[in-house]
Image 1 (spheres, rainbow, N blue to C red):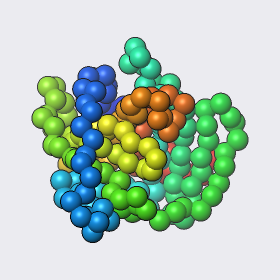
Image 2: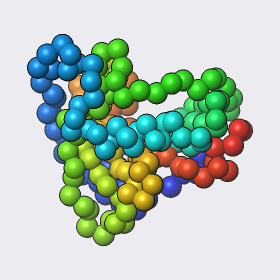
Image 3: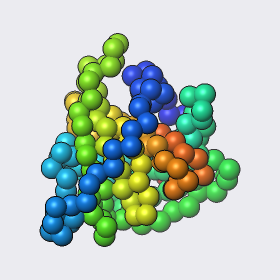
Length: 185
C-alpha cells in the first residue's frame, strides 16, 4: 500500500470545515431518483473513475492528528476487483459491479460546491465539497478531480455522529491509475 497523497491533498484533508449542511428533501418524488444538478462534474468524474478499465485505491483512516493509516486496498482490472484489508494478508476477488450515481435511496452525491483553489496547489486539481450518501450512511465529503483527465484523485469523507460506515469517522480514499498498481496481486 504505497499510495502517496498529492501534496495539495494533505492540507485540505486536515482543514475541511465540519459542515452540517444536509440537503433538504427533494421537491418531488421524481427528483429523488435523479442526479443532483449541482453535482454534474462530480458525477461524471465518479463514473469515469469507477467505470474506467483499471484503477487502484487505498482507503485510509484519517486520525485526529491528521496522519493516515491504511485500512483497505482495492485493485480493479477490467471485470475483476481484488480487495485486501490492512489487518489481513489475504486478497479477496470478486466480479466488478455496475456503478451508478443514483442508488435505491436517491443520488449518491448531493449539494456539490466548487471550492476555491488551494494556495500552492497543483493547478490541475479541481476540488468540490458534497454530501455523499449510501443508505443508511451520509458523509460530508471533499472530492479532488484531475482537470487533465476528469478522473477522481481522492475523496475525503467525514461521517458525523455515530453513523459511521467504517470503524472510524474520517476516511480518505486515494486513487491511482498506474496499471502496475492495478495488477492482480
